[in-house]
Image (cartoon, rainbow, N blue to C red; front, side, top):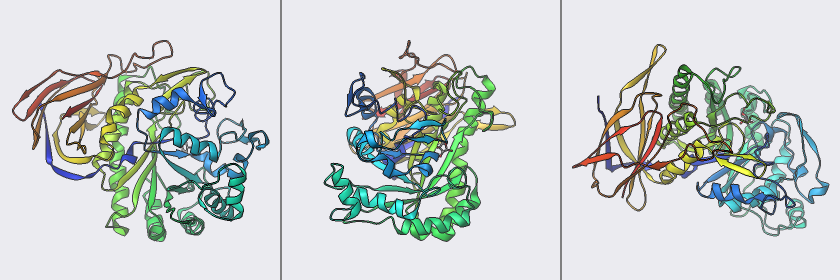
Length: 492
Ligand code: AHR
């Protein structure tokens, strides 16, 4: 049966914040070290220690914002260890992630340099779990104070005369877990206290993000909103898709059809979380001033056999392209509250854009989806209705097709569509109202195998291709969407 999609090109539903297409890079496994940072003396071509190949690839995604240094690492990170001459920087143990030596060669100055190379906005996450108010306060002073002060002077000694700009600052991470195992009342009080000393210096205005709930911990959101809403600009939410549950996640490749379906069902679950946490936020913030910041999301599987279990290195398949496409469609559709999302993590960790092996680098199917979707950044979301068939997953039914549409500043309309079915194609009739169906083009990413992926020997196995297999008739666009596919249709 043909599924009907109605897109009203003349009914705007507000801007899709470009920050929904944000990223996250932690001092975890080979994300920062080897992924971004190879050091100035490396044979791998680099700019002041940062790999040129990954910068070039990531610039093509127009990354709007990058979160750093964690994650769980953030609440163990002492920023003063990571400034000054590298040879003198303290070596510490990354106790949370693999117990490896952290030599602090990548610190604040290097992070800003990376953001400049990527032309992206920094989002820095401070330490509440094991840090002090003074330490957090001084970090902000170090980065943003313009004038005579102990921290500004120290920054200048390290070669940075002018302060940087800092917009996004997270006050702790997962403080219900690795960030201190706190109860919400306790963290709400600490949040109020710590954020007081996160100062706005000069014209630098900080957007303060409170550490939010894990998955469906609605009580956390309730308490934070009740006790501290007036002191925050954003509240985070973390959600990972673990097909077999947290303790038995399952492999990134070589999985069964049932596991494919469960992955899709768990991916769609983020919508319920956004709506339920959003309803609590609405109670205290009906004007929706406070942003929901989904600053960790993605599909998290078992590590690749033979790799360090603390490094969270996993492959990335066409299944992950669907996880990305469906999640981003959902974030777009909730643009009234969701103002930022940061997929975990950019390189070599969990659902990555890029995998590296020494001097080699490959792009993952997830990378390609971010590239195909980048036109949604800061575009006007369009009203969209979809009648889709469903897929049976156990005793539940999930929709077969996910969609989102937006209009860019140049007037072009983009519709992104995902077919979640592992085997069945979907016949679609898209009725585009309020825009002539001229100059239509499409790009698709799909594969025959459920776990099709790219390898260092076969880097282009899964990649987007032109899609012209559609017919136009008046305002209607009909097509057959292959199983396991993400499609982007552009109407100029
Ligand atoms: O992204 C990996 C880890 O997942 C982060 O460090 C932590 O915040 C979350 O539990």
